[in-house]
Image (cartoon, rainbow, N blue to C red):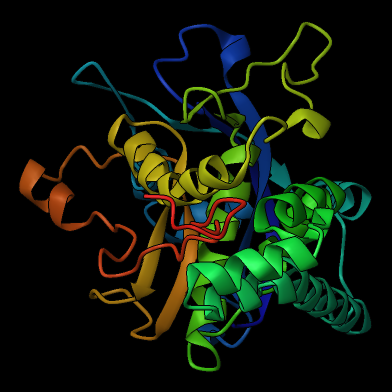
Length: 332
């Protein structure tokens, strides 16, 4: 972090995908412009016009409009960012103060504490096996499992898919908020828990990108919006017809489908384990990172392939379904 002094802002127009040939297809947002306070050479820079006079503003504009990448559609590159009107510091800060949510240190601590509690609840209620599941997995004989099944009537929360569906619907909004600000796990503390949350997050990310898992066909598919803005498949109907096997399939395929979306040039997420590269932090990240699939036109295909980040191929979902029938026999 460094301290900066805001000297103004500009309206950045961005095209989420494709060519954006119509003005209404472009979105807008305010970008603040600041100079580092510890730089003595910039003490006299009070407004953007002062900055324009002291640097090569044409290069700045060119970087803003091209340095973040372009949209690639059918082999052609289309502009994804445009620098719009410049705004004074006073107006820019007034807009930010009016339209932004600012977190105090106390609020940040509250968010972290609340999210930790949510993660712990999901891990205990969903990530871990129930006592019923533990016992059946530990029993090695068909007769032993059959006796246990007969003597212990199955309860709704005994099986993973039931617990998952219940918690997904109950905490979907809270979980999506938390993962924006607080890591759900640390691979150095508990690897099993970490990889569970990596898959669990992938499922939520796909849902947030407007995809739904079709339990009958066993695939992730688009969940389009109705004319009233609500999704075709409501939250309470998500995974409605999924039982044990299909729920496992949804988790197994979530990272794969996110990667397919990226390959098709659509909005997605990629998984970063170690942040390497010339501009990387050279630290462990082990988290999903947003990928809007903007492409740098100056990069050749080989470099693009090298820059791809996939979910670790040596990691697999630990299937939660019990491979036993009502007589305690293995299901192939």
